[in-house]
Length: 168
Image (cartoon, rainbow, N blue to C red):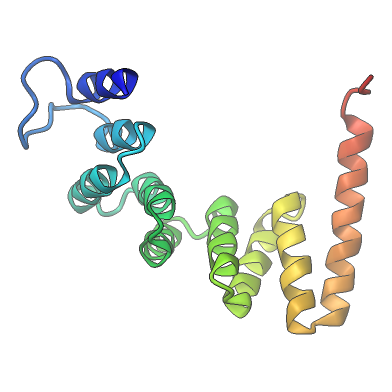
């Protein structure tokens, strides 16, 4: 608990920035990160929402907000932030993968499928994108697409195993 308090104190700054003002030039998500690191997700969510309001076109802040809301247990809010981040940077495969994973956790398989399909278009060698597509296509009964994605997943795993150092 002491380390968490120190981390938050450092993030807030020891120069009297405990109020609502933010020092110029600071990372707008820094305070939220400190609260999240301390497991104080309600406080982190409040701070990240303030940061997002002041920097609404910052995809990285929306990604950070999604992570905080996900850990807080607010999946709908996390998805909302990912959707905004995707509008800002639609070619970021990682955002699509995260969206697919969250939709999958809500058992929205059709939405997860769409997200994973887009992720594989952007990053065809990403195992998480391909595996997510394989599983969601399979769950939706898209047999041919699922088989192709399973085959690609296997190929990627073999490539990864052959390129990784031998384990003893």
